[in-house]
Image (cartoon, rainbow, N blue to C red; front, side, top):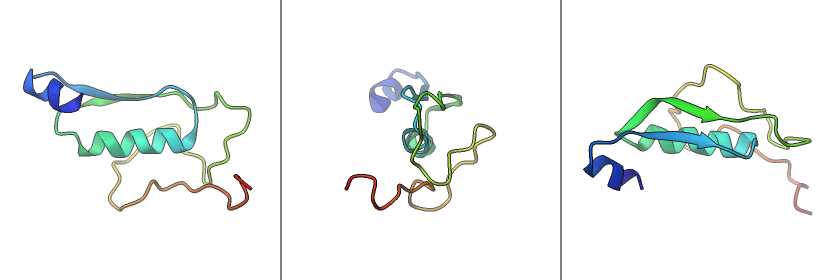
Amino acid sequence: MQRIAQRHGLAVTAVSAFGSSLEAAAAVHLAATAPNASLGAELCLGLLATDPAEPPFPVAPVDVPTEPGLSVSLPDGLFA
């Protein structure tokens, strides 16, 4: 979708619609790689009863990632 938008001169926006820190971190990393990403993002956090990611994703401001990885992790026993 990003490439199609870029071909047509359109910007793309990072959106995290389900409220987990893991999802928001992945959306920010994806936006950081898109040359036509808008400066805004829609990151909806706090929609889950518990967010297992450690540390929780910051609400704002969010820095563009500079290292590989999502900057959040999940507890080892989460899927046990």
